[in-house]
Length: 180
Image 1 (cartoon, rainbow, N blue to C red):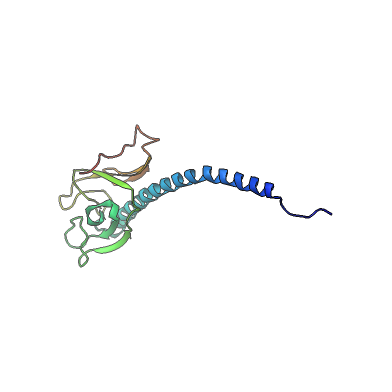
Image 2 (image 1 turned 45 degrees about the vertical axis):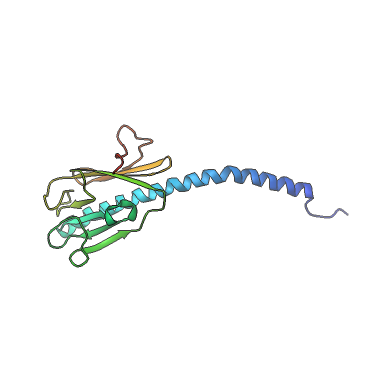
């Protein structure tokens, strides 16, 4: 009668194969996780912009999406402007609708606006993106990058937003230049 079980040689061979598989899978998994972090950040901003535009049109009011502390890496807030719209959240006057938390470490964020220098996007009661209080049309591009992974949220003059990948759609999608 032969004893049942694994021999030492069989166990060592199994452990060696498992080690090789893990050494192949771990770098691919960490690259996948970095890609997902960038995609999640861009999709979060895109969702906030769509929410702001919808609420502005539905409630006949100005709604803004602004970077917390002027830096998109700190997250962003969606708020209904009370009083005179100015693109800055004022806790006593404005109504906070949603807030996105700080981004994971390592994600670089660049942005560009027309007109230049704005840290927010605001939507008029008809759903168009415009500056406040000047009330001129505006557009914004916000880029998220971690290693080779990048995504861009592009908001056009009508207030429509889309997420694109500049690595795949280089002719219609570009990262904004680094902000100072």
